[in-house]
Image (tube, rainbow, N blue to C red):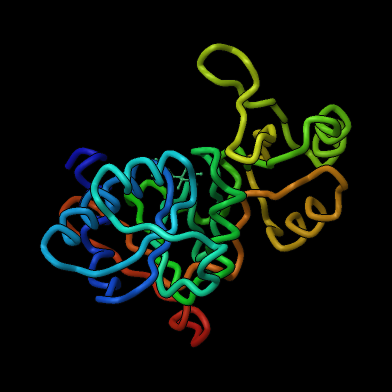
Length: 232
Ligand code: 5RP
């Protein structure tokens, strides 16, 4: 089955975690876009929810589909968020930010009771790090941060938009893509990056995902945080 069909299948499987009356975080990326599309259809069929988007892109898509929207200013408790990921490890640690929205995604995830990750099975890895870790930085500090992160063993590149100019996030920052190949101590690296002045946020999402839905062919593999705690 083609990758896009798997993304759609994972997104469809997440719909059952969304209940009438809930506040729903709307992720960013191609898989999350399928979810927003399907949520729009459910809203047309009578589901009452209010969405909080994690990016300008997702806000525009949701608005075009008639999904009622709210903001963190109005509402600080989110029932469920459905978002994609670039990598998922066996402990449900994630790399996110391939689509450039990691800062708002992490803020929304931090306010969410149930974070549901949707992806095709290619995102499942034994150890994080093959996918270059996105790190959002303030422009003023970027040269210094490139040097510091290279000192941790990564190959670092400044993300660029299609026109060759540095990619700008929704918060007007830059992104460094940091290729580590393997991140054996994700918690340790997360602390090191967070401690660097000028780092706004990094794409390691640790202890945040409650459920991961991975589509492989027509099968959906469901991974749960509770199962990990029980050592299964
Ligand atoms: C955006 C993200 C995306 O969720 C992640 O990049 C996965 O994207 P896709 O579903 O297109 O593979 O973190 O910042």
